[in-house]
Length: 120
Image (cartoon, rainbow, N blue to C red; front, side, top):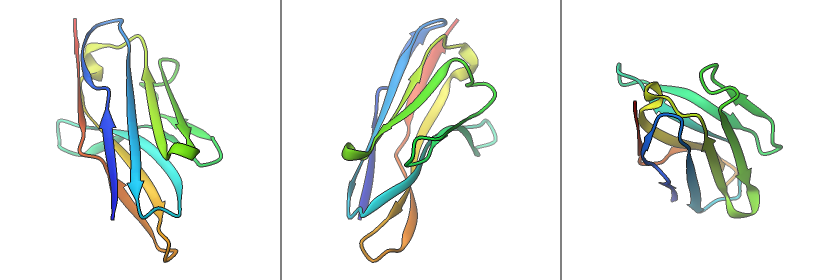
């Protein structure tokens, strides 16, 4: 089994910063893409930022210039540095990882979610 454990959420005033972390553990051969998603009012998960195992990144327009995604492949960990936070960044943030297990099958795993609240 594979577990993704997130940390770093919390409450901050507008203009502040938070750093989210997500560590993957378990039966992992390798991890391809990792990313952060936010739950929408319609209960869907929208992409905030993603990173490949080679370090290529992709950001939602709302995150560009303010958020930075990075990863430590040796630790199977992905980070999201969020600066200049706005009230509209408030939400539950989920980590996602595309994991290849030792049987070479690939599966998508999700963390439990971490709450970010930005006050005005």
